[in-house]
Length: 261
Image (cartoon, rainbow, N blue to C red):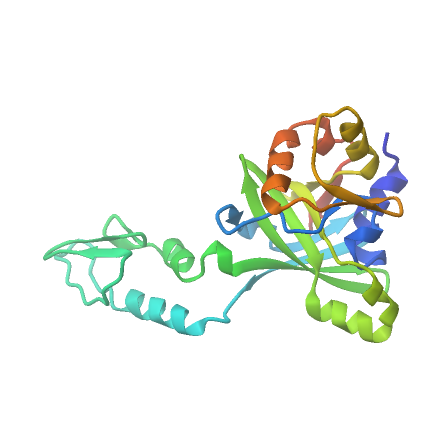
């Protein structure tokens, strides 16, 4: 049975005190748990959250703009779609696989009931595969930065969290010994309930019990007392889907963050 101290270690210990998931009291993974096909993004996660009135989390959506040429081309195709609702449709457009134009009609993924839908346009320009979260954590005088990607597996949301590259490089400059540690992917099953963010992860002891009972077979290694799953992403996902609704991810003392902004 988890104690309040273990719960504290699970959340605060990972996000604040330690820099890599291999040093935390939860199971982590060598490989990411998401693929482009199951990657999603919820704007509801953006904001400021607090845990136990001690730790503040600032979650922000980051859009990958490295391939600006492709994005500018998409913006140009959208800008050339001109019409008036309730009148005959006049269209100037750039040919694209996503839009079908005839003499008096236009259909496409970002056209709804004859009107351009802002949300669909934004999703067209900035698909979920271009988005991730930046998580800044504040605890006493310490600040840490992490990157996170959300995936949806069989109806359940899982958050893959790893230290931010720039932040990790900064810490390496301060303490080269950190370079001996292996940054791994930490994952949470999450639920967003109005102004609450509920997080659940797997503890090594629970994972080992599954192995002993032959209920799961997935490749892993042990480092000190920590468990790192080494199986490929596909196998990780099968494991998560199988146990998403079990006690493994539904402990009574799960982490709960409260929105303050």
